[in-house]
Image 1 (tube, rainbow, N blue to C red):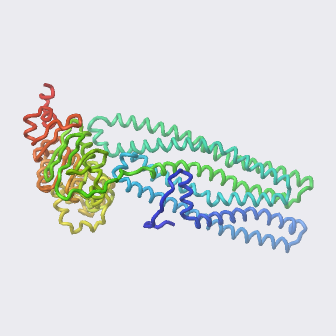
Image 2: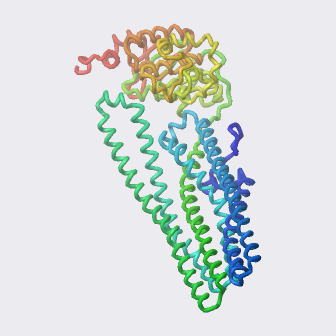
Length: 584
């Protein structure tokens, strides 16, 4: 089975079926062993009726107790050996499924890390969660076809040969009847794929909706929008339920036919064998063996139907994984080094120019405009932005991420201790939302940690927790309030101490008293380093060197905060909540 630190290999993402075959090819000996155990196990199931017929014809009917004992002993030995084979088959196939499960998890996680910040821009969180929670399990389960599935084919051929020795008529009926059963079920599997695909898509949408609700319930309640979102969730849930009913209807027919048709077929063949025995064309022992052979065939046929069902679902889920694996991160075509001296950042699209070593604020009528500027300056969106006299897309991405950090106020916080949460490995990551988590010992003796906590006014958070920095935290720090989470995110960004920090709404969830402390301390802590914040808070703007006022995504005015208050009515209305100016 794949080791936790083993390279999972390069997946084949040319299609769902090819991905499943890649999972098989990565563990060929284990899959071969599963096929061997499954084949021998099923063949020996077919040998049981043969041994029983010999015990009847050679021992019981003529009254030869010696022959009866020999064939009965053989029957017992085969049964005992087959029990051991069944255990080994199940154990081997469990390992096959677990390897496929863990290998898929590893390639999906590796792809998520490779995509970094571009992941959220290309695929919704709900779809990623659906892949990790449901699709991985279904994919691994579909690999059952390499064990019992292969064994079913081998057993079918062996039983067909045995039946020819009994009656050519019965053999012909069996050889023709089993494929007919498979063909009757086949069209339903194609319909199942379509229904399952749509169900998985709706499931991803609903999962994303749940995540949005969990993350923004307080905000929704405060804005009075909880009812609207709840109605939308209810509608999505009902549509998913209806699609689930459609999937269930097809599944029930597949499973019903998979069990019912073989049983019906068994009755027909048994009736035919009984007629032949009554006419004297076959012996009583052969009649018993025919019944046993056909009873054994019910297992392979059921396995074929089940494997077809699982394989159909596995291909659907593998397609979703493949679609995720095909996503590409932001292209890195840069080859030049970052500027060796402090230089200005410039975004031609908006007209924003950020001078080195200064605290600059972006104030926009529409917050999304300010965020877009930060994305371009941090090279998280295509642009003509420059750093000094060099275009950002000409600079090697690893160098750019080592110098410029974008701190999003909704950046991910990974589960672990608070100390782990505060100590991501920023170098080479460049965005708080996608940083890796460093070991706990990384900050145990880091003198910068107390300073970062102080600047973010987060000391009281640590003091209030039962075990301080060693307190376990939930994913996204859900055991903290919104304002506490925001301060933790800011402390984490400050701990990275990048030459250029681009912070999106770093104090939007804080009360006025705490926000004033953070604003004053941020200016002092970042003295001599380039810092950009997007905000409309006068408490923060009062401590900035330069403010760029954006209107329709363009710089409408620039200057110190107080000067813009005196000279720019639109700016004053936005940051000072001057309702009279708005009405006028």
